[in-house]
Amino acid sequence: MFNGLHVNPAYAGYKGEHYVQSTYRSQWGGLPSAPTTFTVTADLSANEGLMGFGASIMTDEVGPTKTNTALVTYAYRIQTGNSSFLGIGVSGGVSEYAIDGTMFDPNDFGDGELPEGRINVYTPNLNTGIFFHTPKFYAGFSAYNLIGKNSLEDKAVALAYHDVHYYLTAGALFPISDEVQFKPSFLMRNGGSGPTNLDLNGMFLFMDRIWAGASYRTNLKVGATELPTGLSSKNAVALILELFATEKLRLGYAYDVQTNALSGLRNNSHEMSLGYYISPRKVNMKNPRWF
Image 1: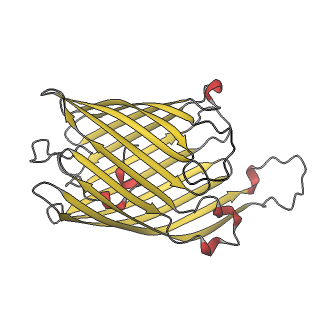
Image 2: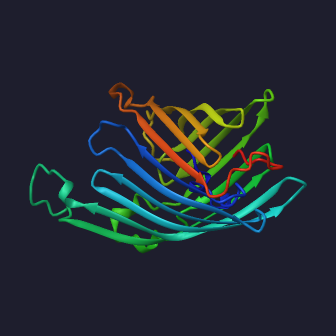
Image 3: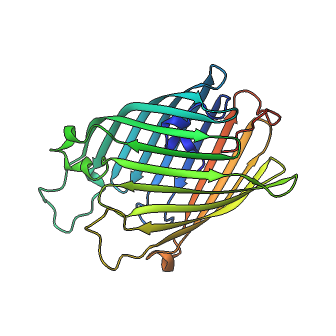
């Protein structure tokens, strides 16, 4: 939610400054073995912003399953107008998929279908994307997990995760007053045989320092032919706050309220972000990077 590098390698270097960030997400808090995600990224800019480099480490944990991914990223920007650029990016690395059999609590012991101890498999990973931006508009498209699934055909532990995923995003920035701007945006995710997720976001920027807004997440039946007929389109509503605590330090927090089948359980989600500019943030730069 707080880092464009997670959904598009062409985003690398967009900020025009060196930036490191870490995020932690706890989903459906209170449920046993609920999902958690931890990431660390480095987003580096070179050649006056025309080149970008990135590195990221991500860990996803859901019950007895765990996914670790490490990626390196390169992006190159082509100037298409006075203040418009088209970035092309690629990232590659490796993913580890693991299951810890000791965490299972079977009704019948000695089930040969359950792993004994921890088992893991590795697969290469390749992702690519494009990212167009001006000072007031951006749009991007990317594809993740382009390779690696064939190497796991006999490893059912990973097949559910390593499908190709597509991301489409766009947004704009509208001035309301000298100290307030409004940024509507959307993010669409499609992958595997599940429903397509659509995030509709609205954020306000106050005094170039505080972002506050909300996001509505829904499910769409786009290209999915095997979904249950009664599948609800409702998913979640998120409240989002992000602020520049200092010229170098950026803090973010999001609170998800479930609107799906889990809504009655009050198991909501939390996401926290900590970002740091290695050089001071240039709030007075000619074209500030607010996306």
